[in-house]
Length: 130
Figure (cartoon, rainbow, N blue to C red):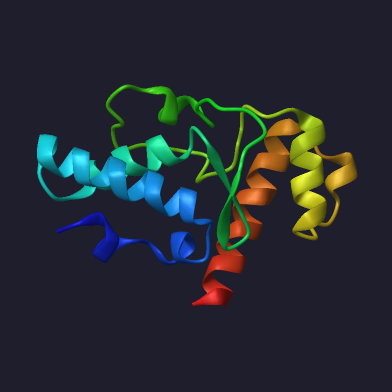
């Protein structure tokens, strides 16, 4: 099925470039691997090179590159990801994203705690937007 028809709701609320990136990667992965989870994982891995999830949508990153160890793999496998949070970003950037999302206690968090708190805030925002 074409990626445009399977576009996740978080991408529907995101910039056109993010949508196009996901759709192109998804459709290419479907041609290579067939429809299913592997095509979706591949599309999200491609998306995470240029975008990060902030709340219920995706925003362009300040720098290109994988956002976590899982997105850095050439063929993403099922496993733990940062769920779109740019875990490779600086602590300062993560703090700013946490502030934007209203994460409480962010000033005392280390980098890993900020990533986890942003993931949690993103999940809440996405659930609320549905």
